[in-house]
Image 1 (tube, rainbow, N blue to C red):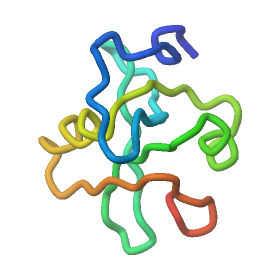
Image 2 (image 1 turned 60 degrees about the vertical axis):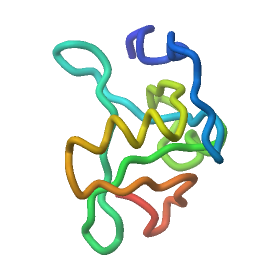
Image 3 (image 1 turned 45 degrees about the vertical axis):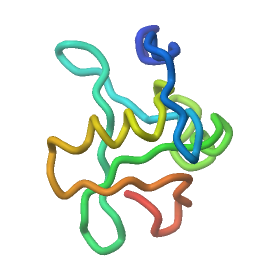
Image 4 (image 1 turned 30 degrees about the vertical axis):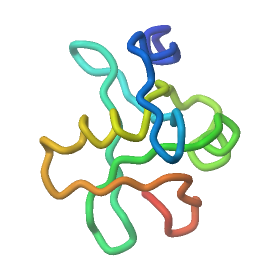
Length: 96
C-alpha cells in the first residue's frame, strides 16, 4: 500500500449529504485508482464508506483508501457511464 493511497484529498472537500467518504482504491500505473464493484444485480457501482471502520469491516484492514466528498466520487465515476454510487454497503450481497 503506497502512502499516496492513504492520505487526505489535497483539494478542499465539497461536502455532500454523506460528508467526506472513505473510498477504496488500488494502485495503478499513474497512482491510485478508485475501485469499482458490482451490485447483486450486476450493475457497476463506485463505493464510499462513512467511516474507516465500516470500510475495514467489509473490505479488510489492508484495503487502501482516499477521502473524497460524495460529489467528487460521483464526478470521478461519471465518465465511466452507468456507474452508480453505493454508500456503506454490507459484505453480504452488498458489493463483490
